Length: 424
Image (spheres, rainbow, N blue to C red):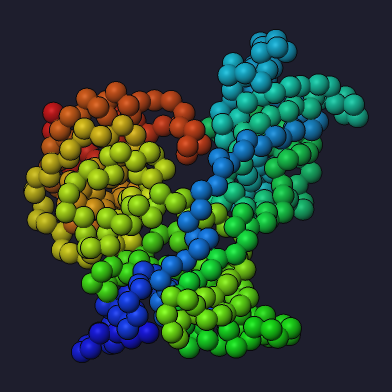
């Protein structure tokens, strides 16, 4: 692996322009650490690779999960739903409850809770029946989803909770139960068992891990542990991080690659985590030759890939000074049919094609505070705003498992940051 001449080698790895002598690639740069113990460095160059198998894979939709509230004394909306619906209505949309938070009993004043609870989303009540051992309580079957960052995540049962408190949104009481079945679980197996770095030129740290392959000691296993963030290498050798693209696991093998003399194919046994969808590869193609030159290239993507479009824009964020306060920006609202489309559209309104200006509410709030291309107060001319008014409406967002973000909410948030809105 080499970098171009001059001062390039003095720059951080993610600011360099990378070159190599082989005709194929490179397409990917891995920055991270290998064999870390006690501390972790996230920007050590580990390898350039022509391809990576197993990083972009389409998984089936996450299946709905089933839970049982054992020995439950329902209250509030949960009790009302069970009282008013006949048995044949349970399990249908009429028995949709929304969200449930599972908490422990409040701790004594002045102390912190030992467990902060778990949240269930898109919950439907399936059935109820008397509990056989706890008089005047019922067992309630539900289905929905546990809020987790990754579908493979473990959900740890608290050790000192003897009664679970159930709450709806805004801490409204839903009752209590003695136990919950189906929520707590071990870490799942990786859905993609291995990642293969093809046409890979390892640097020193990864070579050290490869040298330990075949050894059976705990120390050698530790030396083979890898945690690397993946960066896209553009045609000019510049790189941009692919948010969410990680190679994490244990280096298992290295063998000569057919892609070039001196290159290796490296196999990594993956840690549990979800891969990125294959559609992200198509998004990244728009950045291979540099920043996109055309707006709205994201418009034909679904919500999932629109979210990743904004993530790719974040990974290729260029730190340029904010335009002066009072600047007017034009937002093309023709394709703002969902909240993900809004983030894509405002990113391009502020920072041009492929621009970034947030990809969730917290990130939008950060951007509105400055240092992301625009300095408030500024003026935003929102063209074709009727599209957003039709689609960004109140309801439940089943993709994000929570209340939908409405146009009115966005307008209020922008106004709080002293953004003048001109809806057209």
